[in-house]
Amino acid sequence: MLIWSNTFETKLELVDLQHKNLFNLLNKLVNNLEMSGIRNEELEKAIKLLIHYTKTSFNDEELLMMESHVDKRHLTMHRMEHQSFLYDVDIMNDITSFEDRRITGKVIKLVRFITLWLTFHILRTDMVMAAQISHINLGMSPQQAYETVNSHKIESANVYNSTLAFLSHRRELIQQGIPVTAR
Ligand SMILES: [Fe+2]
Image (tube, rainbow, N blue to C red; front, side, top):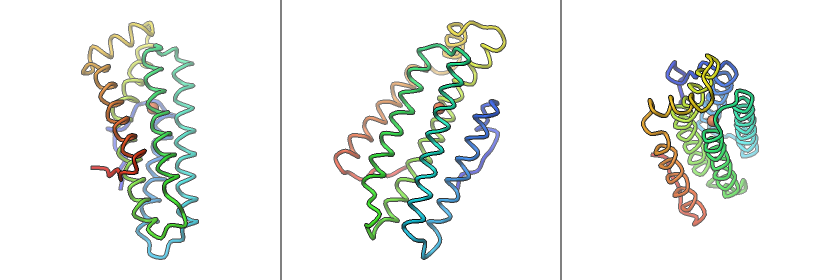
């Protein structure tokens, strides 16, 4: 169960609203999984809705960054994280054949992966984005905003690199058919 708190607030109205909705969808999915007798079709529907909503919120974030003229260095890395996540989720979702009787275990893994990834992404990357937008709105140039935020945040580039390394490692495991469990 994901509980919304101030920790997740970016102070960007649309972004926070979409993140809250994502939390709600994830929690509903977890509740469905805990219900006995849930039909595979219902689970499939809930997962599709969650993925669709995630894609929408990613698109909106990317639009917001472009409209706010966020530095390209951040925009490129942020986009890559979004794409990498969608790629992994698509693969995991394909692996989850809905005729498979062991579906629930696989769905639990998928939900854990989405939950972990989203919280990690919101707390690091989306917060870095929000800080830059806030500086730009106060009159800083996109480049200054990028550099200011990065000098305050622990070497954002390193965070990005380790995130990408982490994600690419998971992707390799998924491609090799090795179960990826969230820890
Ligand atoms: Fe994001």
